[in-house]
Image (cartoon, rainbow, N blue to C red; front, side, top):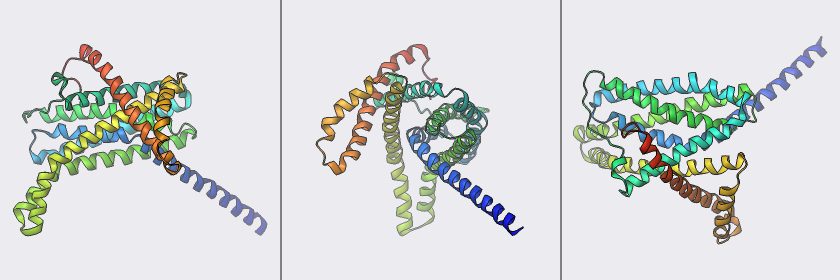
Length: 314
């Protein structure tokens, strides 16, 4: 009996070790996959506040909560099962899906770059002052959730490409973890951004001295913060979109863009000491893939404008 009990305990310990290793692997894989999605996450956080424009401060947080619930539905009920099935039965489609996602990101990045340099004012993402008429809030929430669906699909596809070596249930857990963390992070940040000027106004009105000055500083900071988020989001989209194109075009057999970037970056990396070579390689790839992304997006933009009526883009 003691021998049987010891054997059982040994088996339990072995199972526990395997489970612990699996949990550790899931955590590492989730962190790696989540990092790869950073560019799309920043874009999501940068885009969403525009849907609050023109509504009273009292409606901003309820609207964000509705969009957050819609985002959870998008990721967990629709995209997660589709991603797991895709990973198990049609993984060969993942590079093609990521190329499509990369093209979308390149297009979005190029649009914003063109807006910044005023090359094409007719394509500018407008932020009109909206009426709070009947149904207007629901219309804007629904529009935000549709935009979230596109961005969430890219996030899940990028994450899936990083965990194809995991079994299906591990893929499901990793993708669910990424979905929950990213959704909470994005819309928590959006809520903070949207309400920051209200917080600053309250601090400035209800206090004196340093706290009042801090409140006024928040109010002054908001336009600069929104501009910085927009710029960072654009750079991230260009880098991630270009990188998706380079890596996944190579994955389906064409290594031309990858070799071109390597050829250009090699002499640049050689200017740095050996200890910084890895860092320099990463930075040069990010810059060159970002430039490639903007170039590709600039070629796509006229086609999109031709077939998509103005105003249907987010």
